[in-house]
Length: 109
Image (cartoon, rainbow, N blue to C red):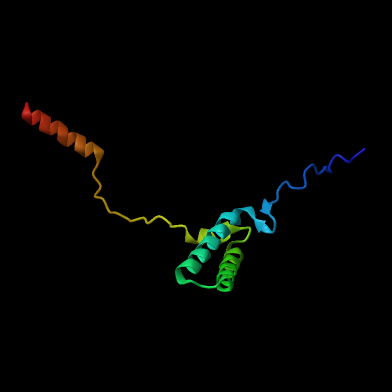
């Protein structure tokens, strides 16, 4: 019989990041976008396929190194923080305001 404190592993993929081959699944669309950009540059500047491939591999490698499987560690540096401004507002007592309104109503009558 098994020990009460031990656990049995049901699915080995639990807790792991999804991958498509060697690429993290979160990188598929950015890498495809980089391929599209490098192909567009090839078409605009009439470059050879070797230059296009080198440029694409360089951009994809840079992207993969910067983000990798933990993209939040890189992209969290660019989150815009809110800008708070301190404003000095003159304090006005609620009771004093109510008394002032009551006096003005008495005068009008």
